[in-house]
Image (cartoon, rainbow, N blue to C red; front, side, top):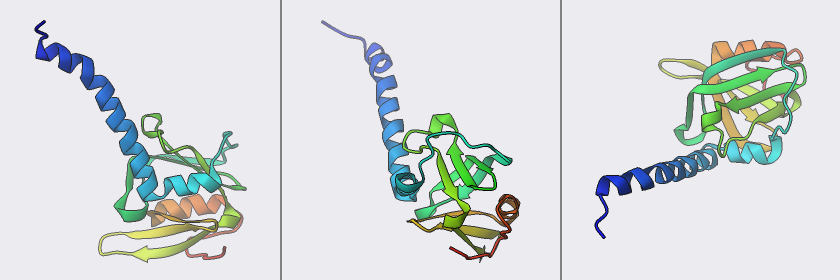
Length: 149
């Protein structure tokens, strides 16, 4: 029986693509630190949002970037991080209480950023300073550069 190669490609490409996509996202979550944060700060229910920033840019360990697919919400209790649904495998929603967050300014040649570090995980999140300041205004009397943990 002679099977057309284009038919085989049509049949096997979609599942192969989905498997590679799924595994790649899990790998990125592990390398960048999202998986580590999820072990401690996984959010099973949505929060009551006081402020929200959608489609933002953030960077985690080893240059792992969430470029334009990072959604951040905050209220008086803490900060929630989510990704677009298409990038969600391996990246469950997170909710981090303000009491577990410390920040420090980071200066590079081109940008001023703020590094968020977390009390119960070694992963960090780097955001543009202006965005970090907006987010921190929602928290209980915090500002960028406030390194309390």
